[in-house]
Image (cartoon, rainbow, N blue to C red; front, side, top):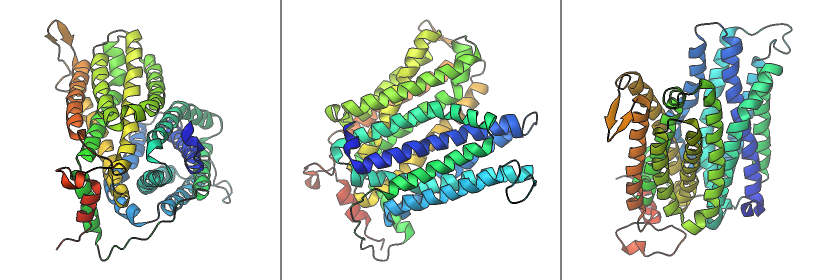
Amino acid sequence: MKVLINRNFALLWLGQAISNLGDVILGAALVLWMANDLGRGRSWAPVAVSGVFIAEYVPVALIGPLAGVFVDRWSRQLTMLRTDGLRMALTGCLAWLLSPTLPFFGSLEPPLGWRLGAVYIVVLLDQSCGQFFNPARLALIGDIVGPEDLARATSLSQATMGLSVIVGPAIGSLLVFNFGIQWAVIADALSFAVSFLTIALIRVPVEKPQERGHISFGQDFRAGLQVLIGNRGLLAVLLASLLSMSAFGALNALAIFFVTDNLHAQPNLYGPLGTVLGLGAIAGALLAGLIANRLGLRRLLWGATLALGLTTLLLARMTSSGPAFVLIWLVGATWIAVNVAVEPLVLRLTAREFVGRVTAVLTPAGSLASVLSAALAGALVSTVLHDFHGTVLGLTFGPVDTFLCGIGSLVLLGSMVVRLLMHNVHFLDEPTESATSPLASSTDQASQAKAPDP
């Protein structure tokens, strides 16, 4: 792709592609190791696996929204280098602790509690580092990629991430069952080393230190929120992200039940359905990158949100596997298209000194929406909707399709609000008369937000 001609972005993309693959390999390997090796035949195995996901989410909820303040204060490149170096060291220590016998300690076998505790602590710390790395990565992209190439850069990153999600679990399974869990951890540690090296080779424009005066952490954090809330374009991005992640969370939670109850198929169809979803995401990311500049990021955002709502509604009504495979592919393509529009819009709507704080609020909000949607889907389908069966206009509804139809309708209606919010929104890099219009730009909001509270 044209954007890979940009040496700096090519280095960043390569490092992140390998690092993301390492993360997926390790995530899948840990689940397999806990379920089929460490906890086989033991009642606590499901709880142990759940602990990994809890350790992954806690930093997103607690650290994520706050990390952006520090990202905006620090050098983006140095932040990424330090967090990658720390994650490489953490995963290296975990590989040592998960060895069948601890090197340098003879035949000493680490106790079960030590190994579980080490996994949770490393996952927790690794995800904590990620809360600083990810906003810094997006801000760095804004420094090294021109506005006209932002959508292509994002689409390429999303496509490679989708590919990692497809092939990573297979590699993780191969490593666990043939070589041992420690080799999956070593693979992740090496991926951080590659990421560190590629980031170090990036030539970043000199970052001029900002004259911040005596501004407290709380004032900086509130200033970031003011920029997000005071910009209609960013509110549209936030809403679209919440809607798409809610649909994704519900689909993840109900997919296996959709296969067995609605498609009347065997549970083994669940795996291929997930693969088709991933393939749709890869294709959707590449296609969105190709059409983003022609269609416009504003239209891409609300149009992809609208398409996601429609495809989710249609998928909910499927009763045979053939059409369901087509629609799950479209759901993956439209869902990722929303994501392709989000990052370029954040960069083009937000003053540089606020990118970290805005991103650090948007990302945890989307993750929270996904978790809450999945939890709500599981709770309602298991209780209130468990025995529900109804007929509307000759169409019959059961528990799973009722909830999916509700989510699809919500996304569909929300896309109209996204369109209204994006109307007449101007980017910071294009000429505008917004200084005299009711729509204040992010620059105006930034100058207001920087003033300390009286």
